[in-house]
Image: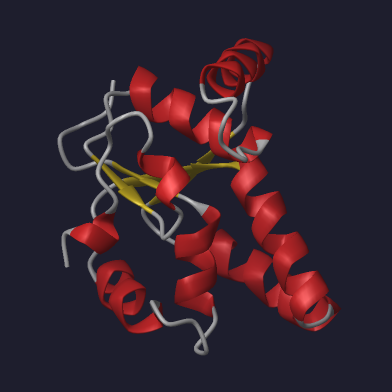
Length: 137
């Protein structure tokens, strides 16, 4: 069960933190300097790695992975077949939205863990009620 201060971290927050050219870089730099307990998924890590690989190069993509390895208190969890099935249901429920499996797994896990806040710049991650941190600052 999630604690009151546990937050879900989406790909967009990690990218904003790691990429100085991102318009939300300063906000996430401040937030990550004294974070609460955080969790994300291996899907988010894969999506972030792919983003840096496409946008920049292999070196920046490896730097991103190294950043994830040293981030404390970020907990990276693997999605289960049950999570994948629940994500498919989320995608069906919000079929008018362009949700990825990564987004839908995050939405499912936030609901399951009763997460109070989502670190993301993607409005899709607020579809199930967890407020986006960008609206709080």
